Image (cartoon, rainbow, N blue to C red):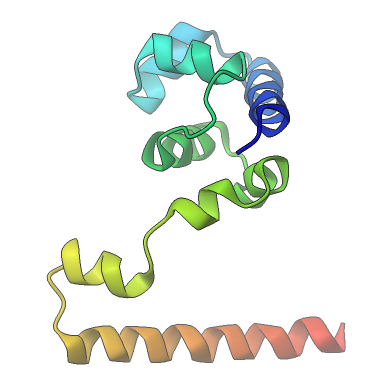
Length: 119
């Protein structure tokens, strides 16, 4: 992520936190992240913030991850593991289970692609 993107991300976080009426201390507690990390993020000092923490922050602040990706040119999406890697390591899924999950995801994508194209 560039410095400009880091600044834009920090501004998005600050603006959303303030709109939600949260102090940094409250957000730190809700998202279970270090206060210094949040302060550095809000000031645009992180060019590679932890994707896990960033995703938790987005969830707590109810920020659509697409908005974060727009501000950072897909930093969050590019930082997340693939479905295959996630289910293999986190869920200890077998190759057959992973193939079934990936096929289901492809079916879902195709279903919604058709809806978007006809809209």
